[in-house]
Length: 192
Ligand code: SAM
Image (cartoon, rainbow, N blue to C red):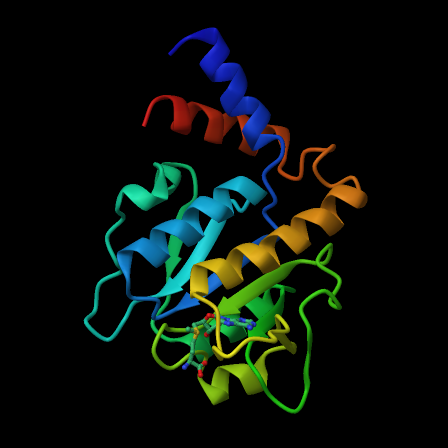
């Protein structure tokens, strides 16, 4: 571990956003799972959340992740409803990517608040039950012939809006994790 590499690790951790995350509900394709993690790393997500597909295990990472899985933790949950409730109990607003009567444009919510973006499975999307208990339903407006975006593209679009708002609010300029946590994680990342 060179001093330069250790300094980079500390710089990245100083910009991590522990109050920004995603919940991937049964996202089952390795390339989508990996691409979402890579975007999470880019915007500073510290820990992502995931409900494994029915097969039981989380998807494996492929080259699409660009090693992001080393820098973004993944917390597993049994099901989406339990995960949403547990995040909400921790003071996190859950924004479900779901088309419904109450859907709003994804740029409307305040992403400087503790926020989790709920992403649905490639085949069936976010369940109605999880969408109902979410704090808001959000959509990326689309004007084409195809009805939905690839889940990793949707994740990136929304997470970079969160990054834009957080940059304006100065949230990348001041460490969002405590100095002790930063030092602990720096050591863990440097010497896994
Ligand atoms: N047939 C599914 C449905 O009806 O929801 C399509 C799922 S889509 C391929 C997979 C996921 O990508 C969605 O659950 C959502 O998380 C995200 N997504 C796709 N298009 C979106 C959009 N326009 N706005 C917000 N999220 C979108």
